[in-house]
Image (cartoon, rainbow, N blue to C red):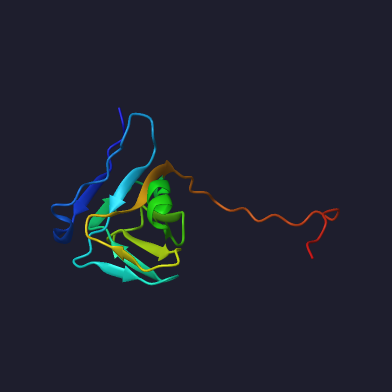
Length: 140
């Protein structure tokens, strides 16, 4: 049985497809633009695109936002800071920072796939500073 992750769909995402696995073996879920109006991106321009979704991740889990291979190959749109992380401390709407990597203007339309999501386990740790051994090489 797959773990359940709770989420809220904000009013501006009503009517849009929800992220869902497209086959029985993949690990990515597509996420869609919940912008009210189309967003034009000139050559090299970037924009923060809303998804209309807020996730409630448990401690020890993260949501990675990545470029979608299909979207990148088809449109030249990439996630600028991929993989971006949304974790248990994130309580705001998931927004995706995308960039136009083509030599033409791109238009992002409401409901268009903009990125892929990957849920993953993560560790929380305690850092333990130790003295540098006397025989350790110093970095330059």
